[in-house]
Length: 101
Image (cartoon, rainbow, N blue to C red):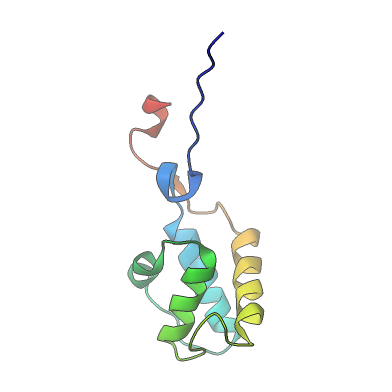
């Protein structure tokens, strides 16, 4: 018997989580006394995972030069704490997903 399976990357493929990510990014920035960035800027930084999102954000505000910075993990853990606490407050399913599935 042949089995067929489909695997999807949920975040960014089936759902738009950019608003929740923007809230998490700005929560992290607030915690470290950096100014917020716009949700549109956060959308530009999304791609290649949350570590890259954190790196792009932190480089933009001048907090670090790269993920190799010794402070990166502190910032990243803070970001993930904000995201995990509010992971699906504003996320939405992209149009057509329900029908497709």
